[in-house]
Structure formats: C-alpha cells, structure tokens
Length: 198
Image (cartoon, rainbow, N blue to C red; front, top):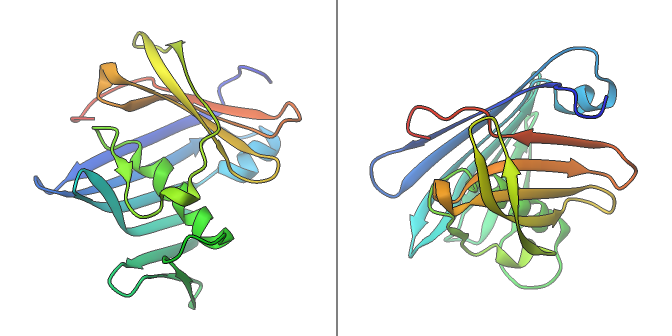
C-alpha cells in the first residue's frame, strides 16, 4: 500500500481583510485502506485565529469526525480554554509554564492548523507546548513543482509524530505533511493544487 493514494485533503483559508483568519481542513477518503481510513475518514478541523503583534492567537478550534464534533473556545483574558464535546464541558488552563498535557495537545493543534495561514507566523502564548525536534531543509517534489522546504518534526504522542515541510517560495505554505508511528505505518499529504487565493 506504500505510495498508494488514499484520499484528498482539502484546505481553505479565509480572512476578514484585517487580522482575523479562518482555516478549514477536510479529508475525503477513498474506501478500503484499513486503519488509516478509520482514523481519517470524514475528519474535519477548523480554526479561527487573530494576528496580534506578528503572532497568531487562537480564538476557536472545531474538530469533527463523522457526526462527532468538539469545540474549544479560548478565553485569553481569563486564561482558560473551554472544551465542549457532546454537551460535556471542561476547561484547560492557558497560564503557567508547568507541564500540562491537555494544554500541549491544544498547542500542537493550533500550531498545525495555523501553518496554512500565509506568512509563517509564530503561535502566541502556546509556544511551550510545541516542541519541535528538528529543522532541516530539503527538496520536496509535488504535482505543481519541486520546492526547497524546511521541515519541522512535531511529536504527537509517545509513538506518533508529524513532519511538516513549509516553503518560503509560497510564503510559508506547507507543501507536505507526514504522520508516522515508527512501526512503518505512515500517511502523507503532498500539495496538489493551489487556488482561490491559497
């Protein structure tokens, strides 16, 4: 199955013309590819973020798979992120520098979703939860062109990691993402088309 297309990831980016951005991602899977499809099929994510002092601050994240949807709203004034999933509500503290697994998960989600916003901006106030393990340059071949890209490796869990390649040639836009578990199971997304001001 290695190298075989399993679906299409669609990303749309919008702006209010000022400092607020909206990113929506959707994975449309082809049937019959085992665990990866179970994990990714019908997966959707979205983020609303505001550019402040050259950094992106998350306002809201929505994730969904099938009919299950969860929302996280960030209240920076009070230092909490409120998560709602199936009518259950919980809060995560956004303050402090101590180890906080739930805050780190949010930080990684914000980091990945905001990579689609042109400009390669840093993430405000959640940097401690994003532990990049390397930054290397290499050529990434896509359907559109071959790009000189910088990779960032982001641990997602004790086994899974995400590698993301972004290029200055497209104002910081990712041209490839790859998730792997260290056991030979890998799924990757490579830029195929650009349009609509992406």
